[in-house]
Amino acid sequence: MTDHSAVKAALRRQAIELPSWAFANSGTRFKVFGQPGVPRTPHEKIADAAQVHRYTGIAPSVALHIPWDTVEDYAELAAYARKQGVRIGTINANVFQDDDFKLGSVANPAPGIRAKALEHLLACVDVMDATGSADLKLWFADGTNYPGQDDIRARQDRLAEALEAVRDRLGPDQRILLEYKLFEPSFYTTDVPDWGTAYAHCLKLGDQAQVVVDTGHHAPGTNIEFIVAFLLREHKLGGFDFNSRFYADDDLMVGSADPFQLFRIMYEVVRGGGFEPQEGIAFMLDQCHNIEPKIPAQIRSVLNVQEATAKALLVDAEALSAAQRAGDVLGANGVLMDAYNTDVRPLLAELRAEDGLEADPMAAFARSGYMEAIAAERVGGRQAGWGA
View 1 (cartoon, rainbow, N blue to C red):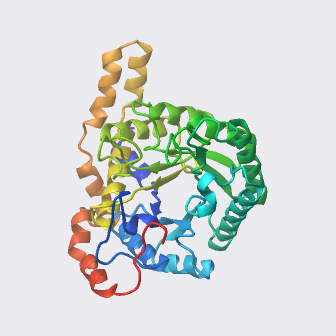
View 2: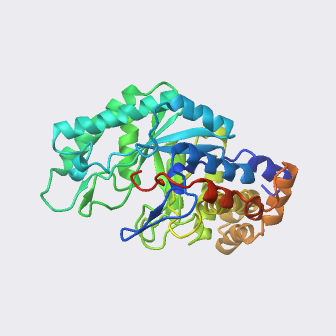
View 3: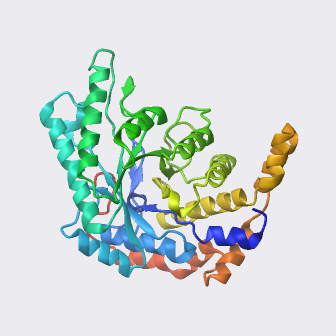
């Protein structure tokens, strides 16, 4: 797609969901770092997320994490989000921070603990009903640390049983997004360690279950764009958790470590039709901003995805296909590199100007005074953070 007007039209359809927890305090296992003005409530998280959408125009929804974002009235929270110009998106279940889940949640060998975990998952579907959310994202920290600790096959049976129960509770327009992770916190086996395991479970669950690709959840050297292409081909790619990594699940700003990888992933999304609205792919961020300010980091991440998408849309598909058919290895690679090396910032600035947005969202937000205002206003109370 080399027609810039067509590229702009495609970009106007883009939507990137923000994680509520990205606006809270976070850090390493050694220290959680506090910042002035960090939200104390889910309402304040949503207000901060709305700032990202205000300046980028492509971040219209906010994912919640339960129980981190527990409120008495979820319908009221959804109404508040709409007043802020955004909406509630994916509901994320948390079955990894309770003491009972030390040996697992839905795959735990104890029936009572499995029942407790399932009760939480079903309660998250209730939250979906109240907020109008269509997606329930499930990530399980379940696994084992030592050989012989538990029966590996039995754990898969328990997991499948829980997933089927959740699917049966969903409404007709709701779905499970199943996330996988190579390791951590379990170091011998992880119950959903890779895309193949997640894909197998989603196949069994049917049309209301799809796989989430977290870009930080892979072994070094994994070709993530192959996974994306395969899942798109099978119509089993439900969404992304975008972040960046150097070593493991680092949760850094997307595109900060390897922007070329992000471009390659987005090219496969475009190539496979995943950028079309009818595919229903949820493009989400999943990041923890430990040392950088929260809102600007989210703005930068959204812009990084937008820039990678614009470059992917600029790939000359006809020239690439011709080179591939001719076996022209260097020519085919050159077509991709030409698109990647294009400076799309002027194109995106032009797009924003046409849509009534500031050409430079980062600079515009810095001038707004919002950071200084919330630092002065949000005094007292308990700042949100891991487990809060």
